[in-house]
Amino acid sequence: MNENIVLPKGKKMEILEEFITICNENKVWYSLDEDSLLLAYAKNDFSEYLDNFTVILTYESYELLKQKYPQKFLDNSKHSQYFSLQIKFMNNIQNIYESQPFLDINLLLPTKINKLNKFITFRNKLKSIKCDYLSYNETNIKKISNKIYWWKLLGLYKTLSYKTMINAIHDESFDGYVVTNKIVTRNWINKWIPNVSFKIKEIDFFGLKVKALFEYEPYLRNIYGKDFENYIIPEPKYRHLNPIELWNLNALENSNNTKTNEIKIPQENIKESEK
Image (cartoon, helix red, strand yellow):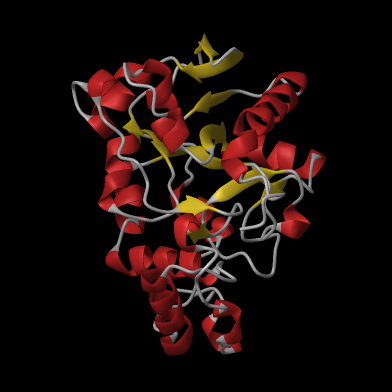
């Protein structure tokens, strides 16, 4: 591997600080999410296991920031090679396959339980998995490249857009809130919050003042269990070489890289399903 390449994890604090500055300047509510929120309260320091941090924004705040900083916020409505439902914040979305630090952004959406249940289907799960794999350009992980190959070749399911997700879930006459994830599964139910006060807890996060969801305790218990403070995050086998792709970094120098972009996708298979 080129020694001059700075992996995303090497500057993850810098990109988080930039994001926080933007949010504070625009008076935008945000919170840490998932493993990043857990890291703030866990007894074990697993920060080296995270390539990036994850945050929550409301849909309205995300749209505001996306309009003001179009080169820094990425979703699958903005880039012809990006299909994943995972929203990202990075230095420059025009260079998504170059090594650069990034954040994953999940959305806090008001919704009704029946709407959420209608969206969390096996079909949408497969669509979201396909979207994630189709965003790859290259990898040296054989099991991932094989899956990408078959998804591109077979075209069993059409893709799922960020806008479709919002339209299907968002409802101002809501029962509660759900925090999104890139893969649509029943695990979304664990990220259901009956009431969000939009109060925040400001915490010290490795020397950086960061905001956390006021309701963090029941939220983390739902995701990681009652004893979430002692939850052990396993060391990842693969790491991000850039904001999009996982690689086996240990084998990078000797591997025959699989160029997944050589598999052509029929145009009709990348159009969003109207169903």
